[in-house]
Structure formats: C-alpha cells, structure tokens
Length: 476
RNA sequence: GGGACUGUGGGGUAGCUUGGUCCAUCCUUCGGGGUUCGGGACUCCGAGACGCCAGUUCAAAUCUGGCCAGUCCCA
Image (cartoon, rainbow, N blue to C red; front, side, top):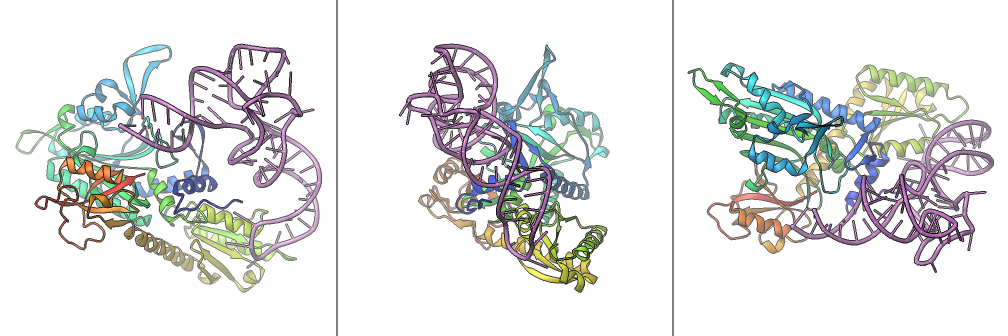
C-alpha cells in the first residue's frame, strides 16, 4: 500500500487520502459537495452528535426539528440575511410539473424557518427563555472547491436558536454556548480560539458574531463553530415579541450557536499523522480493537480468550471490535492505525495462557496488561491517550501563532499572526491583503503568546489609542 | 461570477499528440483454492473500465460540440 502524502507539506492531499483510506466518506456521489456517509464515518458522526446533544441539553436546550423548505416570502424578511445567503441557496420552484406560486428555499440555515413559528410560541415573559436546537441537513450552493467534512453543499448542521428577554440575557446565552463549546472541544482534545468577527465578516443579520477557529496547517485556520448575538435584528421583522411583567410589549433578543461535521474534519486534521487518522476515545467508532495472533498448532485458547475480552469490555461499556479476519496481524495493525483506533490489544498463545494481553495505543505506546484488571487498565490507557493527544495538540497550537509587527511581515506568513489593530475597516482590509487571507477578529480571551500585555500599535496605521489584539490568517 | 485544465474496472494508471496494431497496459482491489500467520505474505484461478448525449468517419478511448462531475487560478 502506498505511503500517505506528507501532512506538513501537502496537507490537503494528505487529508483527502486519509479520509478515503480510512473509509470515513465516499465522495464519488455525482453531485458536487454531497458525499456519502459510509458506515465507519457515520458511526463517528453519530458519536459526535451524541456528544453535542448531551452537552447542549445539559445547558438547558430542547430538541426540535423544523422542515427543510422555507417559503420565499419568509426567507426575504430580514434584509441583511437574505443579501448574505441569496447567492448560495437552492430553490425549489416546481411541484411536479406545476410552477409553484410561492417558490421554496432549501434551508441554508433555519432562522427564517423557525422565526415565524417562534412568533406564535412566544406571548409572555413566562415563555422565555426559549432555547431549542436541531441537528439537520442544510444546503448551500458552495462555489469554492468542496472537501469532505470541511466544505460541503449538504451540511450536517447543528444549530441552536434562542430567544431571550433582553440584550444582557442574550449575552449570557452566548457565554453559556461558549462554555458548552469548550466542553466539547476538550472532549475532542481540540485547542481553539474564540474570536469576535469584524463587522464586515459577521453573520448576515447579526449584531455580532463569534467564530471558533482552529489552526490546521501553516497560516491556515478552520472555522469549526459560530455563536451569534442577533439583538432585535430578526425579532423585529419577524414580530417575535412578549409582554413583560409590567405589561409592556418588547421584542425578544436572539442568539444562535452553529456547529457542523467540520468538527469531524477538525479531529482528522488536528490529530491525524503519517499513519492516518487518530480518534480521541470520545468519538472513536471502536475504542478498542482486538487482534488475535492465530499462528501455531492450536489457536483455540487464543480464540476463546479474545472472545472473552471482547465480551468483558463490551459489558463494561467500551466500543470494542474483535478483528478475527484472515489477514495477517501486521496487515491488521496498519489498517487500524489508518482508521484511527485509539487502542489495540494483541493477544497470542503465550499471553492467553499467561492471562495477559499487549496493549498498544495509537501513539505507539506499548504495555502488557493483566486480564484480571483489564477493564480499569483499558479505561486508564484510553484516558492517557486522550491526555497525550491534548498535550500534543496544545504544543502545535501554541506554535501556530506568531506576532507580526509590520505589514511586510504578513505575506507568506508561516503561521497565523497576532497583531495590533485600530479597529477601522480600512486597516483591516490592508491586513487581509497583506496575509492574503482574513482578519479573523479580536480574541475573546488573551491571544496566544501575549501574556496579558496591552495591544501593539495598529500594524497598518500605527495608531495606539483604539487598538485591540487581532488574529490574521488564511482560512482553509 | 471569469478563465485554464482534467475525466479509462472499486482505487491509482498506460494508451490520446499522428483515429485502425486496443475484444485496452500495469499496480492495487474484489471472489474462490492452497501454503501461511508476533508489523503491510506467497501462489494458482476468476471478476471488473474508456463520464453522459450527440456529431464527424469505412473505423472513435483517441477528433468536434453540448451537458455532468472534478482540479487549479482570478474576482
């Protein structure tokens, strides 16, 4: 089998090869940007969804599901929003052979599907807050090159929509979403940076947008999530109001929180190595893969011990796979490394007789485990792998940013850049031109490598009075 | 949105310039048999492709047009 392309120098080739070789997605479906979720990738997605559901419900959100088609007149109600999405929506204009009187939009996101209904759900301050989420497919007519999980036209989308009594309550919901995201990112061992987007790059219709970005390769970054504060921008055109305790009618303040299968792409991009995918235990389709070594005259002890281990680990709640196929053990090792299994247990005749098993984690760390304490030792090994992945990722994260002091530092930048910015759009665009990318925004917390220092002078104009820290990078 | 390029079995490819030698090459994959089995085994047998639709021609994988899909560059 061929070697994988080098991740550091040929990132996207490496990524595409790994996704295909690990059987995570089949991109041969004949519509651009619409790929097939194959069993292994689907299992990972389902585990990721379960994690999102668990955490968002813990934060007080309830599941809903709205229809995929939105009437054109509802879609058009908020001016900025329609302007932002107009160029990338799919239209349904016919029912059978009949032209529809009211054309339908295939949802690119669900604000305009939900908000007319929210209007009828909300009457009183007692109906607030309204926190609901759904995990559905959305559609965007993406014109750039599509990539499995990273940029697709049929998006597996998580979206929370909330209605709050006022701006402060909505701000608190944004904070709650950021806390939820932090828990999710930790479970996946993904270091990220939360950035308030500049005015010209916020979500169409938003008061402000916070992007959640991860560095992936060189100066490249990947947006893996967003949290938006809409203030009253949607509730006014959609007429979503409530009566407050004093009997006064007020528009609600709204927020949204969006994630997608890009999270899965991010896990592959961040943790993967020259052997293939590396799954953290939280979403590994199989956390433990058992490889019996069946050579020798009588493999029955090995078989029965392997089956025993499988059953015991399964009962203990681990996702475990016994690979008793005809391949030689070495071939299985390569295949499961490519597929990213966190922990492999090798069991041969001598080990079966000695009641031990050899555990090798995806980072290649080998240890012999006694069968009588197997469950707890496997649990430790998985936790230890997750910890090592997080540490490894943190090291790469911190070296993925560097300070830039002059505009001339930006072209050909080998990392994302931390710099001072006066906040004016004109200077923002000069920075974007310099790095041939985007001004991602201003960090919600101290940016990497600044240790609480006050911001540098604006890299474009030299002003010092209104400067903030900002991150410039090249979004993937 | 503008431009350039590409499309051959499940995956990767040779052949295309100069139409015929191609019932299409090689590697891999898949199915079956045997020998194997502690880091990608060997061997035998078998399966599987010219993106789609038109056109030119005695003859099209090869030339032309449209469509679909993909890649890259620019807005």
